[in-house]
Image (cartoon, rainbow, N blue to C red):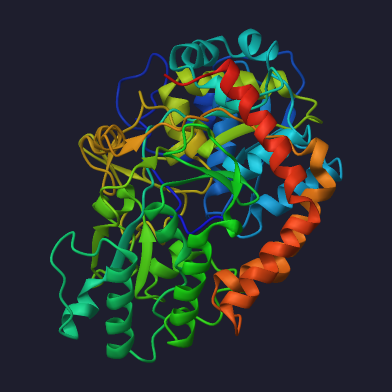
Length: 513
């Protein structure tokens, strides 16, 4: 039961490669020189192996060329591998991963995020790395020891993932096309759209001014979640209230604010504010915002303050306002972006050696993240920029999806989108008093003992819950009551009991200060 979040990008640059013993400077014939440089450095007796990696999003035009260069580079360093890079559209990604894992498919590494990572880990889909990580990726392991992040990717005592190291907070900002709003005489003071009622008023004004436009695909529920300081556990609609010292696990549909949000979503649906296709539309919501397909969205501090929000038209402008600025909100989990090794991988040591190289080798890091200088990016002094006629939306490689768990804060470069100390500012924002680390940070819930009850809960959500949240039911009060009762009768007590047991055990071992 998640709500819309922008995907994240971060640019880095590839410094000019030079031939050993030659004069310094960028190479002229890049394709030939790169190949000669890579293949002449170090030979290896190990047989060549293909590593199959899965990421989310769409394949960029230069992907194969870049990863061929990555292969040549790591071969020159003694790692005899090539790469099969696969992409799955974001709207299909979590479900497809689960299906592939259940079918016993073989691959080597994949990107994952929060809720689907929990599900994959709880089903034993990821390889335990406790022994392999320090042996084959000692530099990466030392970094994790210093960060203390591995606990968040540990289940039943086993390390089953490698989380990212960026600190940030995704508390919602309301965002709207201010260029169109101003054209229609709609003005808001900076920071004045703070409550769901403020949002409601603005949405109606936008719809009145542009009756034929799709206003938003965002339901009302995310705003109420922030207002109520509800901590979503990322586990089938279960959560706790941040002000509850007992950390009592509850179901979101049983809470009074759930019905209140359903009434507001119905109001938006009936007013043709909430797009009638929102429930079934599988298009990427961030792309729709950047392409001008909607007038209103919600996003995070990152995209509220990014220098380049990625609009396809330079005439598009946005205005952003932090909602419920006095309410506490949880910082992003280390497993918001994570890479993990498939339990069926035959090449886990090679995957870890590759990741360890990325931790220490900036040339490799730049090559993986940004590609080939002059083709997929340029350098403007110390800043990474797009080549001529390319931007965030039309990039041939930069901003490829699912790279985020591979970010290394030591190697992050200034970019057109994130200039200067942007990521330091993100960390400072996360450290504000209204933003706090989750008291359950690192909790990976298992559904092993309640799989049948979870299956029924998910089915009921698909049959009833989603329609309620998108305002499609004729009688909100009756529908919510029916939904609550059916969830209770389908094993909700057993689900909550088991999850509460796991929460209590976690707190016993990791009681927050």
